[in-house]
Length: 242
Image (cartoon, rainbow, N blue to C red; front, side):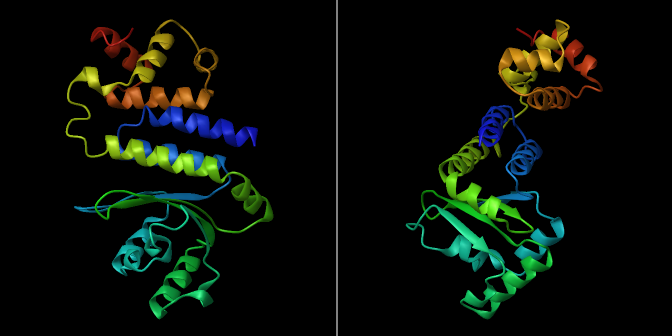
């Protein structure tokens, strides 16, 4: 449980640094793996159409939307006033309410998507989002973890939705170079410029070294730098570091 709590704390920290859809995909995928899941999927239904950020195989997500499964998926179609977390198992196709729903279960199984949980996140004007964590096989250990960690998993989903809603589609993510680095990215670059290692910075900031690496990779990418040293040089030249 301590490892799961640490993974969730790191997840929240990294969300503050995520700027692009690719950033958000990497953050959620790494957290899903740390919690014992193989895939994650975030699906937001908005006025301008669905928004998917996912680590599922692209062949599956293309098939899912091509077949119109999002319109009959029981995980998404359950009344919004029921419980927030929905546990599902693709092997329970016999409980399907229609032939198409049964085919959805069968097709998911053909991609080895067997079981998982989905947190429904209602919004205004019939818009909503759903955050899913899934595995290719079910185990008693995972069932027990889900049962004892529902509040934590719901918090992960709600945090993810809040940050994606605030960042994705924002008019100018990299409007000026000053806005292209988060505070955490600037902190990490500043410590690197002082000769600190990733382990040093992790200890100073109270996060894991891989969290530091995530922030530094984002900073390098946002500055269009070729190397980490190049990123530090660019940030110093543009007076971005504290």
